[in-house]
Image 1 (cartoon, rainbow, N blue to C red):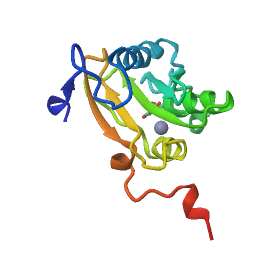
Image 2 (tube, protein in one colour):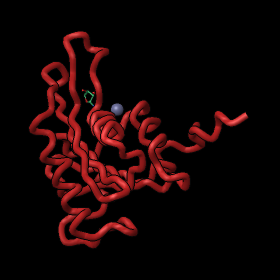
Image 3 (cartoon, rainbow, N blue to C red):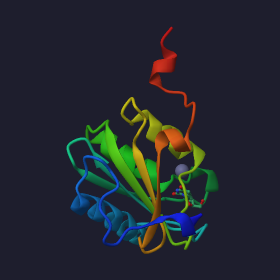
Length: 155
Ligand SMILES: O=c1ccn([C@H]2C[C@H](O)[C@@H](CO)O2)c(=O)[nH]1
Ligand SMILES: [Zn+2]
């Protein structure tokens, strides 16, 4: 899968409305965020960086617990940080693991990302490898098709 991915270095931002510089910073922050991952049980650090409507970047890491089920993923850590600071619209989200593969967000995180996407569900998710050298980019609609969202609660 990764072999088909686009190369990040030197390429233009693949995200409409986001500058090449902002895109590079977002990817770098996702890669660097892993340093603060608390993952002693899985030994699987994950870093995330997201861009809000007003171009603020929030980062997050996975935070595990001796009671394993208490773990929270990097994506949700970043989203909870942004929302608790008043940002409810995410423009782009980047995630990086220490794998040579480009891992994608788990099902729970996809649902939480969807909650804070624009209604067109075109929010780009950039799945980076360990060093951010390669990535796969897909929209939340592609990662979570036929999703359930706030509109579905209308009677
Ligand atoms: O997209 C993902 C997938 C997994 N993890 C975390 C949860 C757990 O701490 C570790 C291993 O599953 O990685 C994330 O943070 N994001
Ligand atoms: Zn997750």
